[in-house]
Length: 126
Image 1 (cartoon, one colour):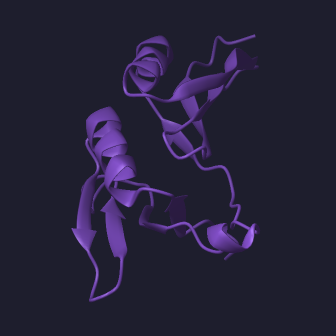
Image 2 (cartoon, rainbow, N blue to C red; image 1 turned 135 degrees about the horizontal axis):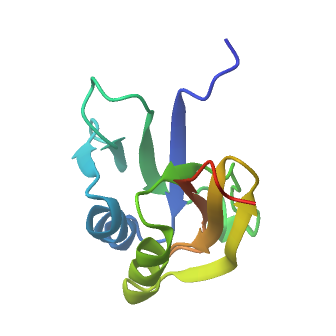
């Protein structure tokens, strides 16, 4: 109980967001039903992790756009991934910081203005 089991990305332009995450992480997107919603598969079923969904940002036209949680993605090379984020039109919002004895993290912003975290595990981080 109390574990994250799903995440959602709200986007002004879902097609642009899909392209960004497909290029950056190799995630797969499958349309779900007749609505403007895509299931996100972040890896194979036997690999630990969670999947999510992508849809058009809610309430944007009412000036009360939905905000969400920051989800963090485990990456092999933090520096290379941050460079790829920028190349694909995103931004690095918080440069590499240490979580002692855990690893290195950064916060980035995708093409839709959503913040997400990146972490590179490294027990020697201080």
